[in-house]
Length: 322
Image 1 (tube, one colour):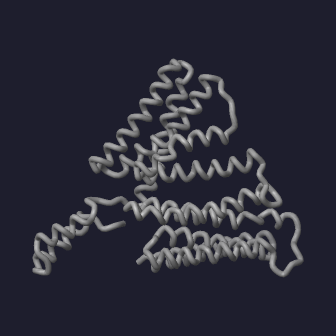
Image 2 (cartoon, one colour):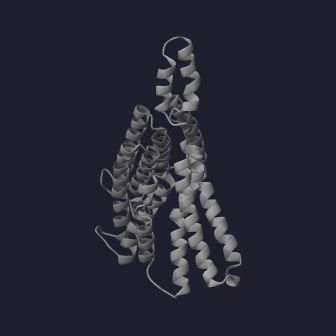
Image 3 (tube, rainbow, N blue to C red):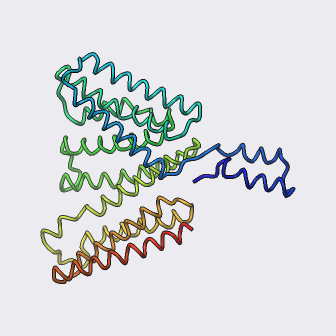
């Protein structure tokens, strides 16, 4: 967490009492820091809680859907959309607790999809999922940058990622030998673009969005490389010295090793956590694919290795972040 006025005030008061700085200097130091901050864990659970609230509201309405007039349905949705947007803007202006602002903007980012689905149902409109997601994306395209909301930015990234995926699957684009390989290759490149583009957020004074972009980008690229050649194991074993999946998994290992180093070097805890988790997964996967043991012994040794890895990674993570 970043230092706040609340956490720094006792130390600053001690410095004033010890005669190291004057009271005016203490006030100037405190003015450079926010009144309070919010940890990534609290923000993550706030976003999850907000999503659960959205789903709960949708389920409550759907239970009485048939008895609600069409005008009330549409008016209620537009009212919720306007109220959530205004609540988020007002919470940001009045510096309310950040979770309130983030949940409000989360509603503002998700509700347009419900509105589009509702309008399609009212007027019996049909179309592709790509057009539905594209319209949703266009409706929130400026929201993360105007609101500076990390939850809206996460929704924005997920919607854009889904849009790219649907463009490939629905239009059957094949830049490589298969559609699946094309999708995974594009996902890997997209993950790099997301992580690199997120480095621009600190220029606006926001670091939470950078953390989310780095985390999602690292996860997307690692998963794409990891899954690219999974099917070859079920088909046949190549006679080449190095099989493709071995090269890709080594690439995942090295990529996340670099992420752990950067996380340790620059104080990015999320990179350390994700990198160590992925490294442990790759090591375990290598073992499972290369071990030539009986089924019972394979599960027994794999379970033992997993427990050892969990303990080792946990201790390594604590030592790196301490």
